[in-house]
Amino acid sequence: MLSGRKSLSQTLVKATFTVASFVLVVFASYAFAHVAQAQGVTSNEVLPTEIGEVIGTGTGDIRITIARIIRAFFGFLGTIALLLVLYAGFIWMTAAGDPEKVDRAKKILTSAVIGLVIMLSAFAITSFVISRLLGEGGALGGGGTGGGSSAPNDIACIGLSATCPAGALGNGIIESHYPNRNATGVARNTRVVVTFKQRIDPASIVVGGANATVAILKSVDVGAASNQFPQKFAQSLTAADIDVAVSADGRSFTFLQRNCPANCFGSPTENVFYTIALRGGTDGVRRDGGAPAFTGTFNSGYLWEFQVSTVLDLTPPQVSYVVPADGASGVPRNSLVHVTFNEAIDPVSVGSGFSITRSGGNVVAGREQIGNAYRTVEFRTDESCGTNSCGEQVFCLPANQQINVSVRADALTAAPPLGIYPPNGITDMAGNSLDGNGNGAAQGSPDDDYDYDFRTSNEIDLVPPVVVSHEPAVLQGSIARDLPMSVTFSKLMSSASFTSDNAKLVPGANGAPTNFSLATESVSSVAGGDPDQTKGIIDHDLLSINQPYALSLTSGLRDLRQNCFYPGAGQTVCTGNEAFCCNGVPSQVACGFLP
View 1 (cartoon, rainbow, N blue to C red):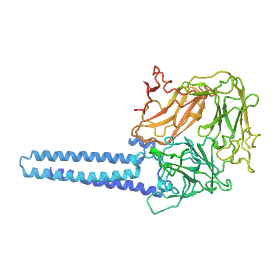
View 2 (cartoon, helix red, strand yellow; view 1 turned 60 degrees about the horizontal axis):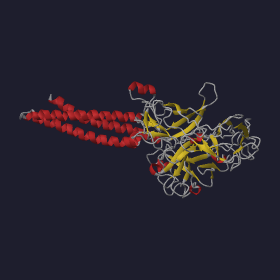
View 3 (spheres, rainbow, N blue to C red; view 1 turned 30 degrees about the horizontal axis):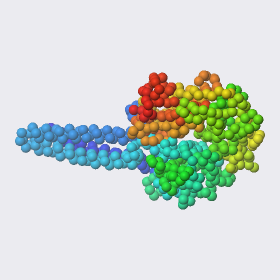
View 4 (cartoon, helix red, strand yellow; view 1 turned 90 degrees about the vertical axis):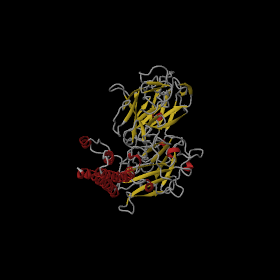
């Protein structure tokens, strides 16, 4: 019996050594493996579904699975150690002065305590290793930067002296950008566009040099190196390489490579990664008026990465559809003019690309806004004609008039379809001028202008939109971390209002802010019918593991008649005049995240 009990306590000591060694070997192998990979670890490395189902670990990141198994085993060993201490105490208390039993109890207790000390030390070491290799909290891209750059931040930020950016798209001052995060197959003659939620001081946008606030970094794999990180160093483009232009509203900035197509981004023979880094802090990008653009949680700035392919984009953009439709009559006066293209449009080209006139040729004054991931432009007049259900001004087109809309093509350079720059008409993100007549070739203005008309009535539509469906369902559990999210409204919505201020992906108390972007799609409520509803689409990075999230929709959302969305109005289980409907419960205050 003595030898059996002795071997049990000694087994505890040996087991802790074994587990500690196993943990360090496993995670060290991951570290060395990642040094050998130029692209490093991404947040998309998961177990195949079949394997996860068989062994009961799910489809989460395999490193997190191993960490959970190790921690569970430590818990098991701790339980054994506690039982041994209790057993030794029991023997000692019941020894009745028997020296042999007391000695046996002391030996068991000593072995158990030694095992506990070793186990706690091993647990501390492995917890440190796990936290360093998996990142804070072990979310692996579930929040924060979302795995946008495979290189460590201090390497990716070469060319900037400020703290490396760690902002989350949709949560700070950045509204959208092009190319998208982690985009692949990007054309070499692309333009890089960043849109802020507020006007930005153009003088604070400095590319390259000692005072850079914007770094455009060409990543180069240099093979083996002198430290433990995946080796991706960056060559920063300077103001001599890049032209910068600002949109009419002062919120969007376009960066294009000079002398393209002779000298474009990337290479004609191999794919090349680029990282765009925006500096925060007092010496970084500034708002109009001088205050720092990046503040609070995201004061360090923002960065993202994309891959440039070997091809040039020489296909001119076309108009996909317009609302009101060409030739429509009886259109309510408070309608927005909505034009959607088949690809992203350079926002700098929008200000000079639209002309709205009424009967007799008089210009209708107003302003344009771009949304839907740069694919949709909307025009709103300056003539106030009442208020909506939120008490905000509604602007109207002239009543009982024919409204003529002209979407102008950019003038052509000597190398069509490339338009001139700065543009005087619509171009896509590669600088190709609008193909308004849809013949597949860019002919410039006026041959390729897209012209259409409709007729207004004296009616003003003040019916607010409601939500008719959404995915995932309210309080749906165990959703995939990359599950697409969407919400469908009862009316056609303003794409320009579907912003991250008005549609927010909100994490729970322990969840991290996650990169997300928004787009819209016009759909029909009847199969085969004309589009009469809008589906809002929320694209996001991997969500944090086992955390609640909510999609928060505010009254800042508008339909194409400028009526504000009334939160909760579409959820019929709520009654009364409450401002919000939170999971079917009426509320006068905004809903928090889902419990």
